[in-house]
Image 1 (cartoon, rainbow, N blue to C red):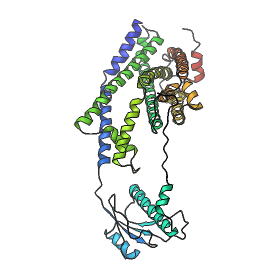
Image 2 (spheres, rainbow, N blue to C red):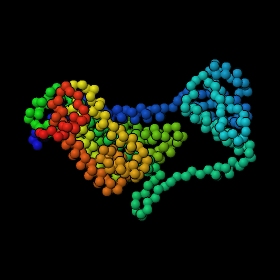
Image 3 (cartoon, rainbow, N blue to C red):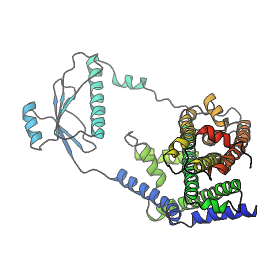
Length: 439
């Protein structure tokens, strides 16, 4: 244990004292804040460009009225298309909108021609289509002699408000499912990034020590399995340290941004999500408050500890395999792709399985994906926000612990042979034989 602790200490201190670790840990929260500031500026920026649009209404659908808004200014000049095209070329107008006469009142697909020398932006196109669509609807109502007020009463906006079965249980709003899905996807994505990145670091560290022959000196005083285990624990400690620092820095930086710079990060994220949806500022503020309330109601006291447990188990399981792969790689670094592909594929498949699983968090795919040990570190943390049955969480942990211990043992058997092998391409069959070599 004394030697194991020395290896853990060496791995931990060597990595946390690197400038790259310090800079990455400190700068990533500030870069994220900078991203929020830039996005906030972009969404608060008002375009000063005025688009003057001439309209030729062949059927009188517009009734020579079109409300100006969003830097769009409309006019109905008594000129032909050729004359208006010349004015567009002379920059008197930005474009000419030609609304043809419909062949029949029953026509549903309506094409409008827009003549311009500029590239039509998506926002302008959507705004024009909505405006013209409303005008065509009014035109059809008037032509058919219908009562517009009576037709408006036919429209109904339906929203589902989930209610608990038992009295006193936590009530959910109509956006609870969306919030839980977003939280689950975020936790799953963080898990994928941490395990894959740190697993690769473990492999590169093993390859570097093997190439530099440092490992030969170290195994003279410590067993190969202890060396591998110490490396895993040390790098795992580095990961937890970085996450702990971020858990402190992110709230402090966002709080400072709100107090000293007046940036409402929650409001900015809502504006990003609702961009182009036509939601007003008041509705966006109400949505931001509702989202904050829903996030606060999530059982973080269960999710955070469980997330850390799954993170550590998933890290040890996959990183041990990455360490075994790194020990088997010789001088030809092209072998790394062949040996790490079987490790990368389960992570990728788990991530893509997580996406449909979040659409049905209690379905068959989500349930078995969160119990199966290979995908459990990614899918179960994503399901935790939906409060899955405790027996599923317990079974998932038991199987994951057993699988992690088994994979660490297998990796140790491969590692003890692979680190001494040079100048030879290794096959999976040969690596399987290493498991039965005697110490």
